[in-house]
Length: 202
Image (cartoon, rainbow, N blue to C red; front, side, top):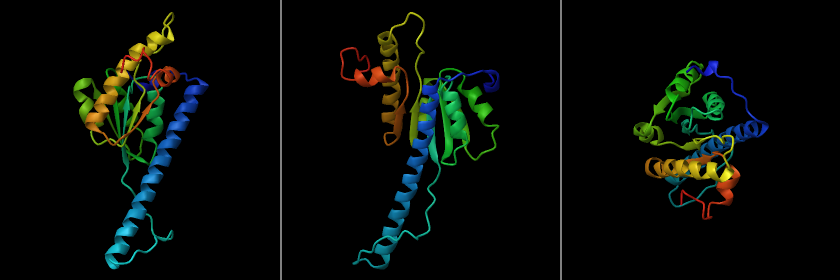
């Protein structure tokens, strides 16, 4: 399915969420770059004067941290597709891995036509979850079912909590140091009931 053929309408809340995520990723990348600069400065000074400690000066040339690997789980969804589009255009992202049980290879193929350095790869099904997550720096989870007519928030929560449980467990196995961002609905219920009796992911 071509991405251009799908007309996606986002709410103001979803647009705000996407904007916040991109800003957070940019800030995260800047922090890593700054830490790399400070670390290299300390190693250099200690090597020259092993018995003396010198402050790191801010006029040092910055060290460019390698672009990050970002994985989007649930990449075929209405929120994940425009989010992936923004990530494809970010200079902080070197590899963009799109995972879902449907549509992710097609979304990846469409985004690959955008002329940026970010390399996009689509992964489909549980068998390909490990290579998608392996060595990821950031994992964005948007996977889950939308709330259907007649479905209560608890019913949506119970279904999506199980999905999140499996994906987060996979992150613990394949990319334990990654920063994980969960934006699966209902987000407010996921937070308030994380210790409640209805938490099926417990």
